[in-house]
Structure formats: C-alpha cells, structure tokens
Amino acid sequence: MEDQNKLDWEKYELITKYIYETLGQDYNINIEGYGRNCIIIGNSTVKHQIDVLTSETDDTGTYRTAIECKYWNKKINKDIVMKLLAVINDSDIKRGIIVSKSGYTPDAQQFAKHNNILIVQLREAGKEDKKLHKELHFFDLILNIKINIKRPEVTNIIAKDFDNNIINLNEKDQDQILSKRQME
Picture 1: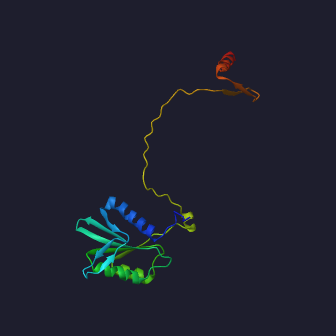
Picture 2: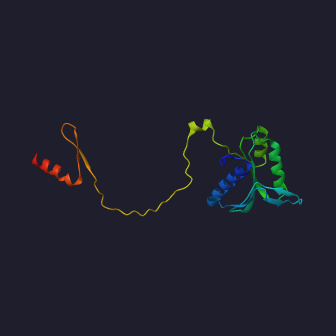
Picture 3: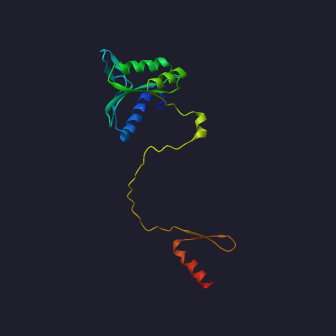
C-alpha cells in the first residue's frame, strides 16, 4: 500500500499552489492555472507548460508570474533558471519564481539575481529542524457548542477522619457530616 503522506513532485506543485493561493488573499494574487494542463502559448507560437501561473494586481497594473517547481534531490543549476527566463521572454509573463526542494548552485543564484528571478527553497522538515521547533499559525478554529447544564448528582462522598481513615458515605448520609461538625 502506498504511503498517502509521501511527497512527490505533483504534491509539491500542489503545496506551492496552495501557498501562493493563501498569499493571494492578502496580496491580490490569483491562481490562473497549475499542473500539467497549465499551458501558455508564447510569442513564438511555442507552447510552454507552467507549474503554477499567477496574476497579481498592484498600483501599476496586472502582471503574471510563472512559478517553476523542482522536487529534485540535487541543487538547481543555472540551466533551469535560463529555461524559465526564456519562457518569460517569449510571453507576456513579467516575473519568474523557482521553488526548489534542495536549493541552488552558486551560478544559479547569481544568474537568477541578475535576471530578477526569485528563488525559494521549500523543503520537508528534517531531523535537524527539530531543535529549531517553531509554531506556525495557519488558521483559527471557532466552535459553537450547545450544552445543556443539569444539576450534578452526587453518587457518594468519601471523607477522612482525623486518623486518615476513609469513611464512605452515601448521599442520604451526608447530613451526618454536617451534624458532627456543628457539634464540635
């Protein structure tokens, strides 16, 4: 039986989409498409598959962002950055982001910075992260509960005498304790 929680590249793309979709609530980011079926046609009439395609509106207008997801066990090199840059240059996409599980080589970092492509590392938590445990707040859960309150019913009373001996009393005998204390 396959492990339902095991992450693969498709779930990685879905998580990335979810993150940007959640950000969209505060930053006017809309998801235009994602996954295998997210295809744009460039100015060259060549089709380009985009892992996550967003649009964002700000004071200057609306622009699109192509997000490339790489769930690889090795660092991303400059060739991947160059490929995304070529897609951006062949389309009406204004910005690019690469999300990687394993990080980036120095040449990929430099080339991305020079071409205004954002790079993000999104990885699974490992053993070394346990010492850096931090709580993240994802959402508030509000519960409305209807409760019927009834008078509690006493089924028995356990009392101790001065010698710490336990005295079991039924509810009907509890008045004996009050009577004895009043006498003292």
